[in-house]
Length: 121
Image (tube, rainbow, N blue to C red; front, side, top):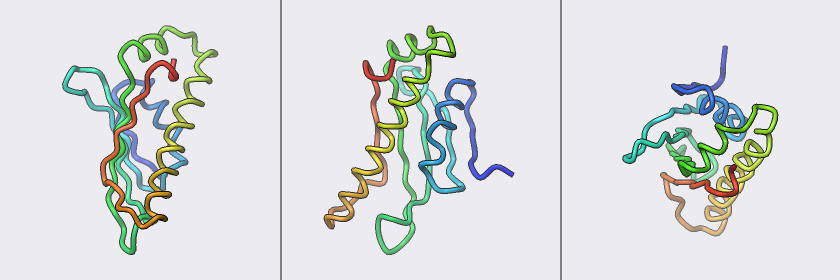
């Protein structure tokens, strides 16, 4: 049985989700949804235990700039590792930033958007 739920229409977005899945707790849901401009977004829904005394429902939306996504899709599969590493590093840094906010006693937003552009591909 899988510990995560992947609801991605395209194989590349499911692959993005699988690259970052272990950064989130079990029962996390990864979905691919279109943005207002039609560009696909990866949205991560999880329950965070680290940001307060009670569990909090959190949402992270990962928006990849259309040009960067097109460059990624044009890469042969063997050259996509760098993009995966960038995605993972940015998600990890974003989670770390939320943890730092909480540690400082600051309120942590329940919804976060991570935008990837030139660095991604």
